[in-house]
Length: 613
Image (tube, rainbow, N blue to C red; front, side, top):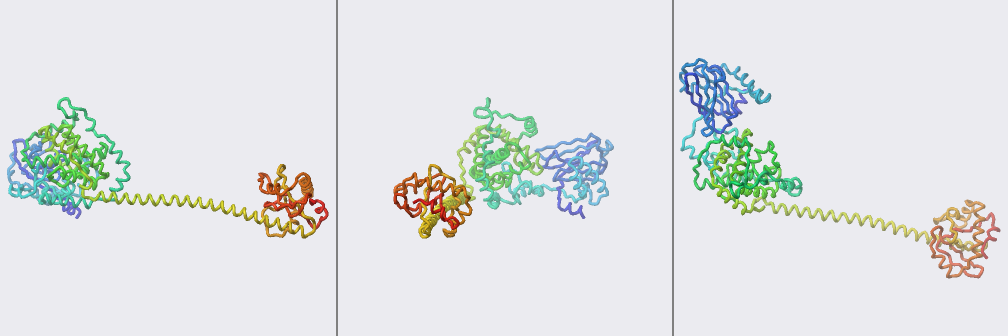
């Protein structure tokens, strides 16, 4: 059950093949275009021969026995996509009959060799690709039905849509259905016209555009600013001594080896095809320059995907009619798909591409070789080398340098604005900035309010404190007046009070009376103060009162000044209503006198003697 499900989900193509023989060898020719020649499996065992090169698979039952003893050899013609294999015969000189009966050579389903063959192949695969691949191979049904692939006639091919370098290819993806979705975004390239591809591409871009992602990169552009400062390798080239106006481009040994592997050929392109080839070249270089800058020259596993995703040529098999269409397509795709979506990267990629073209066709060739290597090392993307990159690597070497310079000059004059992309970017940015300004204004309004609140709180506290002081002073004045009145009514003689500024005394040691006003009566306060005071304190108060009466001449002016004079150590005196020795009436002071003399019922005679007459 497991084998049948895997087989049904993995459809392989039986390639076109042919068999011939020599006295000592069996010669097998297999046509496998658009495949990786470095990735193929060959299994030889007696009359069984199996060949696998994704997506092609061939299994044959031969009329004679062959062996694998080290004498086998193979050759691959990349231009024709033809793989030729020489396999030694087990018995040299034996003639194999019926090699032209191709259908009979295909092994029937349910062959008895299925089980051991699967085990042997899975063992070999495990040595190359690891345990995970080994598990997949063990469950694979090698006896899948085979059907010989038949080439389409010229009439059928002419009805198919063209794509590839110079629009010279067609029918390629008809045999590569499994790899189709991994390489390009278009579903049916063979039956979709250029206009339909463009419309489908634009709809897919509009659907993929994320306003949140774009605005995040626009306002949080710390990393992007670093990428904009990066200097790629083409900005460090020195002028060429051989070609005026071009740069000296060094090639690595691997690049030179790859150039030797290419087959020299000529391309017969009409004027329209040549124009489209130039435009597609710009499109591919734009995607390449963006990837180099966004990774700072350090490629990663996403590099093949990014290059082909940003290029409409590689991803949608697009054919452009103007340079402006190329720039608009690239700009839209940069703002829709990669990690960094910033319009500055689009503008800088255009500048980088112009710089590469100005450096000459050698610089362009080095870029194409770099792309070829990236795609060559990626499982599905290698097909794009056969469709585009390999042909570009060969073609660019034969074009005139003046054509490249003219293209560079045209690209430098081209302009691309945000509104050209038709993604409503300007409106989106304006709306985002308005929101940002409103948020800043609200934040600025909240900050002064908090400050005013604290100031108001401080002023309120100060006002409350002042009001408290005024209330306290008023209460003290009232209490003082009450004291004076009570003294008169009691007939014990009026007490007069005055502070002594030259010799201030702390209120805590001099006056036992509480400073804060209370609701008690004056009589009650006298009793409490007298009880809390000691005998020595009363004597000291008496002495000080006598000195004040003898040394100071109290007048209305001096009394007024004394009431307003500040004291840092003691409070000012509070006078009572009465007469001095000169007969002057003392005005009540607004503050409490620390030398308050009180009369108690216990010793009324002493207090009367101490009063100032």
